[in-house]
Each structure stands twice: as C-alpha cells, then as structure tokens.
Length: 596
Image 1: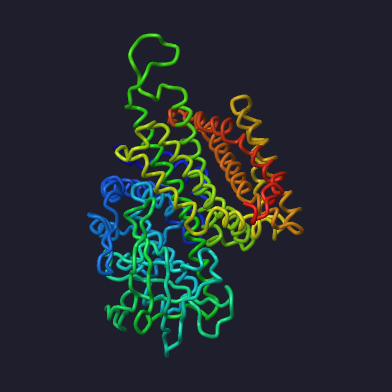
Image 2: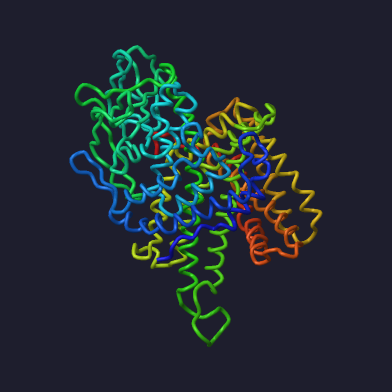
C-alpha cells in the first residue's frame, strides 16, 4: 500500500500561476495571504494528512461506522484524529475571523480541502459539511443565532449537517413533508430525513442540523419550505449543553464506499417534537439552503480532484514496483516493471493530465469566488460572480465524473490485482462513485448549467468565458512550433464548445426538453475544453519559466509533456461531445417512456 503525499509542487503552480494568487492577495481582506503563507499552510496540511489522516483511511474503510442503541461510533482512531484536527486549528482555516476562524480566502482553503479528501475522504466529509453550515448561518442567520452557534462550529467543537431530502422526495425537494409547528420562540419539528452524512457520531459533543421543513400554513411546493437550526443537544443561555433533543438515528446506510462516514436516517419528533429555531423568514428555506449547497458543490468537485490524485499516486507506485514482462521489441534481457509498457504509460499520463486540468479549474473557480466576495469594483464583482455561477456546476459535475473514470483507470493499471481489495485500488473507485451524486447528480448540475447559466442568460457568461479561452491563441502562436500542437488542439476544441453553446442558446427558448436531453454531454464538453484552456496556460507559463537559470527543469518539462498529452488525447473528445449536443437530442427522446 502506498502512502499519500500531497502534490505540493503542482498545487503551488496552480495556485500561483493559474488561479492568480497575487491578484487575490491584493484584494481587501486578503492582503496577508502571500506565497510564503500559502506554502507554509500547504506544507503543514500535507504533513498532517500523511501522518494522521492517511494511516486511518484503509482501516476505516474496512471497519466502517457502527450503530448501536441509536449511537454511531466512528472507526478506531477517527475520534482522536478529529480532536487533533481541531486542536491544530484546521477546522477554522476559512472560517469567519469574528467567530474565531482564520478567514483565509478560498484560494487557500480549497487546496487544503483537496489534501484532506485525498488522505481520508470519509473522515473529512464531516468538517466539509460544518463549513457549509457556517456559510448558511453567516449569510442568513440572525446576530443572536450567529453568536450562539458559529463560534463552536468554527472551532470544530461542534459539527454541522444539512437535512434536505426524505424517503418520498429524493432530489425533488418540493415533496418535503417534515413539519414545523411554532411554539413561542421556537418550533417543534417532526419528520424523517435520509442520507444525512455524519448525522450522528461520537466525534463531538453536539451536532447542529440545518433542517428543511414546512409550517402548517405554508404553500405547496418549494415556496413553502423553511429552514431550521435543530441541535442534537439543546443549548442553555450560558452556552452549556442542555437536554437531548428529540432526534434519533434510526439506521445508517450500507454503502458502496465511504464506509467510515456514517450516512444516517434521522427521525425528528418521535415524542413531543424536536425543538428547532427558524433561520431568516418562513418559506425561504430553500433559498437559504442553496447558499450551503453551492458552497458544498464546489467542495464536492474538489473531492473528484482529490480521489483522482490518490488513485493516480496508488497506480503510479504499483506501476513502478510491479515486475512483469519485458519491454516491447526486446527478445531477451531482464523483466521490467510495468511502467515501461506503453499502454501503462498511456493510462498513467491520462490520469495525471486529467487530474492536473481538474485541479487547475477547481482552483481557478475558487479564485473567482474570492473575487466575487472581496473585489472593490462592483462591475468586477458581478463579472466574477457570473463566472463562478457558470463554473460551479462544471467543476462539480465534470471533476467528479472524471474522478470516477480516473479511479477506474487506476484499477486497470493494477490489472487483476486492482479488482481485489487487498491492493486498495478498489476503494478509490468505490469512494469516488458518490461524488457524482452528492449535492445533486451530474444530470442536475447539467440542467442547471444549460438552463440557468446558459439558456436563461442567452449564453452571456459562457460566451464571455469562451472569449477568454480564445485570447490565449495569440500567445501560443508567438511561441512557435514548440506549442503548435497545444494551440491547434485547443482552438479546435473551443470552436466546438462555441458551436454547442450557440445551439443551446438558440434551442432553449422553444425546445428546453431537447436541451436537457444533451445537458450532460454539454457539461462534459465545457469541462474538457476549460481543462484544456488551463493546460495550455500552464504550458505557456512553463515555457517562460524554463528560460530562468534556476528553473526546476524536470517539473517544467513534465508540465509541457502533460499539457501536450491532454491536448492530443483529451481535447479530441470535444468534437464527439459537441456533435452529441447539437445532433443527439432527438434520439434521446425518440422512445416513449412506456416502451422502454
């Protein structure tokens, strides 16, 4: 079994050169964030991940979380690791400073999230959800609620969850039936919530649930949903814990992967009703919850990057050590490790190139989030928000879909040994599979992309992004033959993306169902081309850096080789995906549902 080592060189390159660390550092509230600080944070995070989190990953997967008498126990070592995690201040890295957090921008916290998820995704889902609760309360909670709940959520002394769906609802939250009846200054909550990640556990003394429910006179559909804070233990005015709330863990799911992360069914109000506190106004709960969900979508996209990186490292280590066969073309001589075989090298290059492109796009999007929040120019804030809104479903959908593909390729590198659990390669595929479903399936992300982000705004943000992709062409041309392949492949891919985008803009008003039928291919097309844009930018920067006398030549030549591979092996997918978008809708809808 290989151990995880954070790819710090590539992470620093993506943060500084592709996401634009210096620009973020110049923003109000971000001036203390410089390259030295980022390097120190990443180095310490990498050390903690390698020494504390990664050693628990495999055993946690084998043991899983357990439920007995309504209490969930995390695998051995998880509670102690989480205690070290919060004592080291990691939980508050991006948390608001006024509540004890460090307030670092997303261009720093996002790479750290990648490190956590690569090392131990199951455990680190817990603090990820807590950060989402903090986002929602910061945006929509009252000053009193923020004072009562946010300090201990920021420190990690308490954890948070979001309770959206129910057995009959699935992704259709208009079907939520949980009830909330007002009783003085609070509400009594009754109902059942499913798929609650870390909804019950023994890591902390309290858990703060954000719960969607309906008041008795609420209108039907999504407009009648309200949002409530419902703690596992009630909190007294002095901040001490009071009596146990009327919440019970009925069961935990037996899942394909992330076995160490308890996915709970929670029953609210089996007795008098769980006491909850309204966030904001009644009937605006879904609006408030989307603050948390959009935050989580970017985080889940980073999970796709993280699992891909871990699967790549595992496959690379196996390929370097597994001796099998002789090199092609040699009749004699010693047997060689499988990394010498061309097809194994093709698979490893595919894993490496896609992961680097995904990482760059995720960090670039995190920087757009920082600009949208901190930029002093209102016009630039709006532009950055538009870019963020456009790229969030792409990062979430494309990075997780590719994460599954990369983890699957990792098993293929191992051959038959990858299909058995002993090598550990299978865990990454099992764990990766949930990421395409978390916070809305790929289809939901794609419908959001083609509907709200392209169709409704007539392609304004998408075409602006495509224009930015085209601006790099002149710089690639100036380099000459060295990057001619990268230039040609990117130009052709951007052409395909633009033609598909214009088809969606033209088709959406009259045939939205046809657009929805090809929304996932469009999302994959956008991700593939945007990833190629990042890789071409990386190649340009690497070419420039190679002119410096103290250049890290091996690393930079590796960047050029990986960018070339991406252009020649990944970007050609754009042609097929664009054809699928512009010509494939009719065949999707040709067969009547009753005739399947």
